[in-house]
Image (cartoon, rainbow, N blue to C red):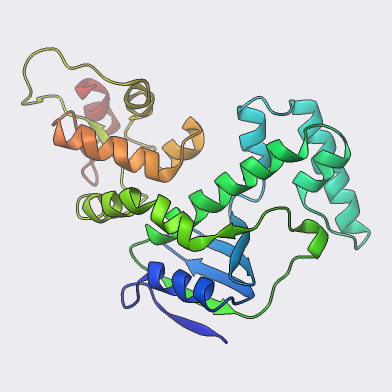
Amino acid sequence: MSIEGDIRDFSLVEVIQIIGQGRKTGTLSVEGERETIWVYFKDGKAVFATPSNQREQLGTILLREGAITEEQLELGLRAQKKMQAEGNPNRLGTILVAMEALDRATLEGKIKHQIKESIYAAIGERAGRFRFFPELDLEDEDILVSMDVEHVILEGARRIEEWSQIKDVIRSYHEVYVINPNPAATGNIKLSPSEWRVVSFLDGKRDISSIAEDGGMSRFEVCRVVFGLINMNMIRLHAPGESERAVASAS
């Protein structure tokens, strides 16, 4: 079974539920604004996922959270590249486990997190196309987890509801925001660590995707923080053609 369509005409939540309930095996590609997100299914269960422009995302997450060292990541990527050149591709996570750089339980936890984030990112896309085709470019030995997509969707119900509100305000991942020089709010405003992190990147150049990548956050986290800061009148959309000098003086 192959299905495809426009994201604006179909609910990706319903598409994913159809795949799960139908126990389908194959690959779902979601071509959004800035990237293509791939979610792999076997017998209706999600077994792997990745954004196309973040192939090393799992390694980056493992490194950032202290699960592996930079040296271990470099060795793993080098081994992966060599295996690919020899016609024997393998997942970075599988290689790191074989190297004893981390244990399987830690790897599985990170892969599950990546699957969830990828599914939520796909659901959060405003425009683009999706396609599900019955081809699974994964070997059985590469399948380390098997997640019930219905559970993932139920677990993320609150996030999906938040997305519907956020998308009415934040139209694109490449919108640029800057600090509002004349906030209407009065009194002392206390920002959370994540809010401070996002504010520190508001330089009039970085868009939401860039802040997520540079700040080690998911785009949903950045959008949620930006949404909150907009409601507090702390930040505003960077006007097209606005000079960097004006942004610098405002901040």
